[in-house]
Amino acid sequence: MRIRARLAAVPRPPARGAGKPLPLRVWPADEAVWLDENGVRRARAARRALAALAALGSRGRYGARIEGRGKVVTGPASALVLRDAEAEIGFVLSVTPYGYGAEPF
Image 1 (cartoon, rainbow, N blue to C red):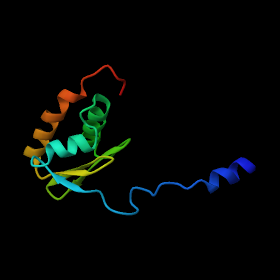
Image 2: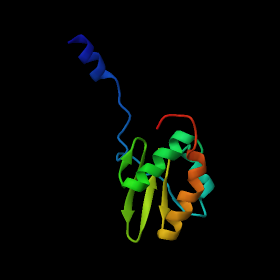
Image 3: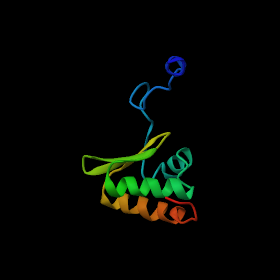
Image 4: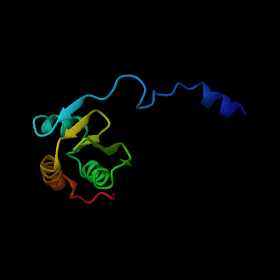
């Protein structure tokens, strides 16, 4: 019982939905900023971001959802707006080379 009381007393970070919303970036103007902010140049992060986009949902710290005619890819630091299918294809082609690596998915 004492352990549970101590764990309950530890402050938790706010949930993603609480507090300030994630900054929105737009493809392709903010491509480099978004990739750097969210660590997507690392193989494991790139694979998770691509998997979230392919399955539309959350893949660990990365997620994707439909927004109007396009999609929004969220990372731990910011969200990226892909306005149409052409932007989505450009995103996939740009991120895929980072997704090759020896790290497990």
